[in-house]
Image (cartoon, rainbow, N blue to C red; front, side, top):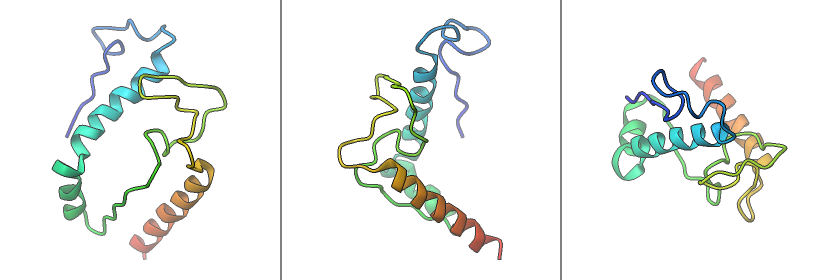
Length: 111
């Protein structure tokens, strides 16, 4: 379990809220926490092993922002541009495939 305390956007420090970096920093901070918790070398396998029916896979070439809808404007951050796709990666096609997989998974679980 982890509780993210966003630097610059918490009850003690609101300095990031009015900054132009607000929308690039929050995802990056959350991504760092998720990477630490679900790093396959440490925890990813444990999570999959203990969740009934859990499925996990690696998406070649996906990049950090592949699981979110593509922004219509550039979103530069220290982790890269969230609006850009890695070379050779088709985010639109991947998201359709992911949606089908998620819907299929839940349909199977609810039968």
